[in-house]
Image (tube, rainbow, N blue to C red; front, side, top):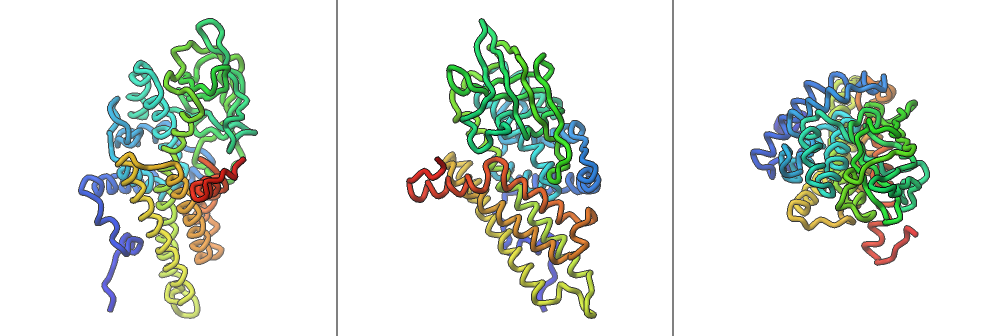
Length: 393
């Protein structure tokens, strides 16, 4: 007789958690307990209504030390890459939109200030953002320039000691609730970044409605009409397109872990359903075709987690390369989406309701497949690394 295992252990057949140190295990438990207590009971309602108490959640998440947790100083936790990844995993096990809130705050907005900002910008914004008392957004993508940000139409021109910014950004997480916006613009001097309080005259955020995915996330269009900012708002160390691209690499690392959480939740939900759903006088979990799906899903989660752990080791050793991050996102998002679709099939019609999380995860993952670099772009990044030939242009 096989030994009895818990539902949590069912998704860790290779005992991968055994490689975690006590601090990492404790963090994982804290975030999972918080997610189960504060987030999971409400997520279906938030998703269905398309509304989320983001400011309240940011303060709660900030109180756990998860916002900008991989940064050093300025009230940031200074955690290792694996700890940050584990936090993203447990948050996205509830919903991708919740992980996006943390990713955009810490890996895009805060990281941009941390890596490219002035000391005064860091002191002004990072402690408040780490506590969740100030929320940031990251304005890079435009309606016509997603995969090709170098073609952005947003402009910044010098006017005496000030800059005048005109243009717009699209699909910006947290835009309508942000206190500070990181804005990227083309100038005569090249791509430049600016750290702009959102109450500055000329800044406007329009909420994007009617989404069918990432509904538990605030998504906005940003519009800049003669937005005048002093030169001290400029990120002094951001001197080319490389700066925003490095910020995106930080965010993609969180995605690599996060989607494993979504996949795990799909597997756990489908196992629980399969053990309780009786057809032809036995639970459907006892049929070979269903067990084949479970085995395939568990293998996919395990391989994705092994890849994520390895990339965390490389990141902590400061040896990680962009194409490695691309491979992580390419593999793990694709695998998570396949797992969500397979898990949904086990639930049949029940799988399309908000009573179960699987279709919500599947819908969210369709968006994760195309943001922070589309699946196709990451395919070509990997291809270039293998062949030395640039097929993007």
